[in-house]
Amino acid sequence: MIAAEKDLNAVSEPGRWDVERIRRDFPVLHQTVNGKPLAYLDNAASSQVPQLVIERGTRYLREEHSNIHRGVHYLSQRATSAYEGAREKVRRFINAREARECIFVRGATEGINLVMHGYGRKFVGPGDEVVISEMEHHANIVPWQMLCEEKGARLRVIPMNDAGELLLDEYEALLNERTKIVAVTHVSNALGTVNPVKEIVRIAHARGIPVLVDGAQAAPHLPIDVRDLDCDFYAISGHKMFGPTGSGVLYGKAELLERMNPFMGGGDMIRSVTFERTIYAGLPNKFEAGTPAIASQIGLGAAIDYLNSIDRAAAYAYEQELLRYATERLSKIEGVRIIGTAREKASVISFTVENVHPHDIGTILDQEGIAIRAGHHCAQPVMQHFKIPATARASFAFYNTKEEVDRLAAAIEKVIEVFN
Amino acid sequence: MSELGELYQQVILDHNRKPRNFYEMEQATARAEGFNPLCGDQVTVYLKLDGELIKEISFVGSGCAISKAAASMMTQALKEKTKEEAEKLFEQFHRMVTGELDENSEPNELGRLKIFAGVRDYPVRVKCATLPWHTMRAALEGRETASTEDIGPDISSAHISA
Ligand SMILES: Cc1ncc(COP(=O)(O)O)c(C=O)c1O
Image 1 (cartoon, rainbow over the protein chains, first blue to last red):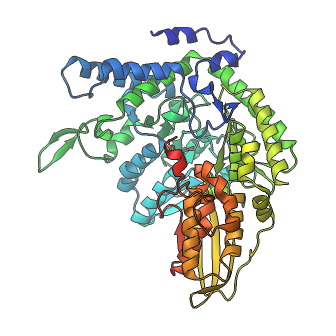
Image 2: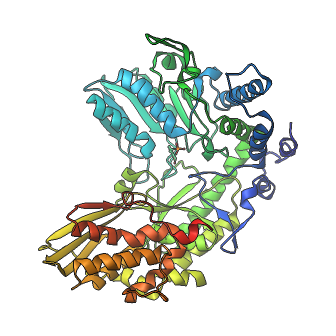
Image 3: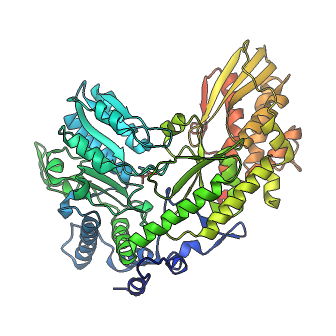
């Protein structure tokens, strides 16, 4: 174990969250932007990376870098064992039955596209239906649209109410014998809504329909147990859960993955190749053509080590307290409208300010050292539901503070001052 | 907010609140719709041309203060200008907001549009300021749409090296 790993074990006593201590693990947080201390409130886009992950990646590049699965030499074996070690960490993190059910991908987008190509193009035909929801990220809309267009299939959409909650009765009514797959997000990136995915899976399974869960926004906040959810696929992006970009996981049940077509063809995904015929490799290699992002996936393993070293229940409670506090502060500002008021939310708060475009809010907040996201958040149908072009979004991680929420509220008041 | 003053000058805020020539033109002879797919901003520019001359110009759409003010002031600047003059003004405007033209030392016809010089310090906002102009050019060229993604990187060169 390296030094940083040991340090972390002492981080928190149960129930108490020592945010100052946690912040020390994230070097990027300690800088000034436009002369003000950075308040990083754009975690739903990409979270920051702890020292442990930085050190693990550096160590790989300095001491272990080599191609995997290909060499008999020492370095290749070390790289392979680190890479496969990361896969085992992922397996435990999401409680998959077997490590070979955890396919390394570039992120949730690639994971969903893998299922669209491997499962969708094989099993969805003319007149069949694919069910998604109104609050999906474009990553969980566009691939299915492409599939439906190619196959002459139909895309059906689970509606939501004005709080940003899916209407489960309408969902159930959408399902029929033509429904070939349901693809829904666990947590909405634009609204923060936590969807009852276990229930969604149960309803689909009652009709024998497999379910893909987009877990990109859930992994940084919630404990994930794919066996408890009983979902068939689960997609994760490493860069949203304190790991590097280029890392991610597509979990799939082994029996489904076995029956699917490969996603990409190339090296490492074969058992044997002749010009007449190629026999594909077994799981997970069948879905990992070419040299993967080895350093990134090892970094994801380290991010999981980090998450295991902190008290995640306390972290979640703390984030929920930040969310509650921010909601209260922002609601009190005249002209601010919060978009997404579901009963169950992750620490994401989307809002608009009357007569001010979110981009202008983003620029003014940036001048105050506050990083938020402004735009449609790759969820244009959500914007259409609320009849707005865009929102500003603050998203919190367990290293954010109440002082940062106060600064956010003060800066929004300043925005209103400038524009009125 | 001192630095911000450069970007959100009173004139820009005023045009944002009360955009000029902000209407759908029924008798337009050319029109084009512009999109910024990154932020969902959308603008439609209407032109009434008399030969080479822009007799009337208007716009509608939704966007940030910078894009709205840029559209509003563009319509004011281009009325009664020739197509060629409009092209030239766009070229100067574009070079100014990307940091390639020093509006105070090099000859130009930018006039009141100089107020947008501050945009060059906000590289991600350059597209906001140029979207209405790209859309105007699309209308002049008889294209129906313009997208900030089709026209290459509109980034402030002042910031690329920084
Ligand atoms: C809910 C959701 N799904 C999918 C994605 C796509 O993730 P990535 O860009 O890492 O592939 C995102 C990222 O914004 C997201 O928030």
